[in-house]
Structures are given as C-alpha cells and as structure tokens.
Image (cartoon, rainbow, N blue to C red):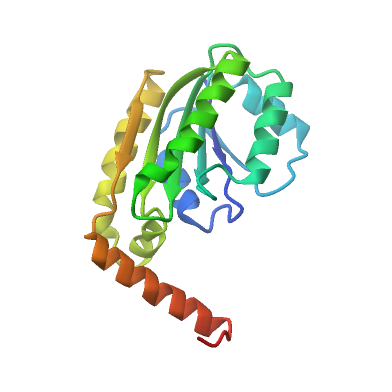
Length: 196
C-alpha cells in the first residue's frame, strides 16, 4: 500500500513543513512525496496521489486554516477520484505558541474526508511550528519533541491505523518562545532593510 506525503507549504522543502516531510519520509514504508506550492497542474502526480491508500498532508497554518492553494488542491484531489476508505492524516505547523489554532484546519480535513468517502485517521498539530526550522539548524538536540511524535505517526501510517488528534507544544516556555520570535522578526526586518 503506497503512502503519499503531500507538502502543501508555499515554501516547499525550505520551511517547517519541509522538516516534517523529511522526517516522515525517513520512517515511512513505500512512500512518495508531492510538493504543492501553488496552482497545481500535474495531472499524473494528482492521479497517483488519489490512488494512494494512505495520504499525509503537511502544511503551515494560515489564518487558522489551510493555505488557499491547498484548498484548490483538495478540490482537485476530490475530483480526481480519491479512493474510498483512503486513510487521511495531517501534520499542521502553527506559528503561534498555542496549538489550539489548528482546530479549524482539522475540521476542514474531517469534512473533506466525509465528502469524499476517505477515512480521517488523525492529525498532529504543532504549536510553535516555525521553531522547528531554527532548532533543526542550530540545536537539533531539542527536536526530540517533534521526532517522538513523528515516530508514533509514522508507525500508525505504516500499519494504516487510526492515530487520533495529537497537539504538541513547543519545547520552550511561552515567554522564551515569544522573545525568540521577536528577535527573529527584527532580524528579518533588518535583513530586508525595513526600518523599525
């Protein structure tokens, strides 16, 4: 049974969704990846994804929901004839510290499954998801919180089991995450020659 890992981030491999995608691909059996950055037109790849028995959608949270181009992709996937009873999982990274912002996106995917006949099988919602990129580059030892959850998800996917909805917090106190975010914003602003 093949597994399609669909990265729905506009940043593709270069963001937190890319880190999550790479982590999953190392642990999944018979998996392939599809990067959907914008208006997706590759019909062959779309049909291949629609025929997969298990699909994992990996995406950042934008305004408490999936990115707009991802909604178009979901519509195309539904029209391509997604297999009935396909197991659908999702990994959502939320830039806010609180992972409760992911609830609307999870509801949207549950509705997608109900409309297409697919089987909603679970989600992982990471609060402070952008932190994964920073930790991946500078302090990979702190990524244990992410890897343990991804190991459990990969095990459930490999066995086509129900995973449930898991919410994962950033491995830092809220004040520390907020301070790190502010430093990152200032650094990005200076790099782009924005005066503050």
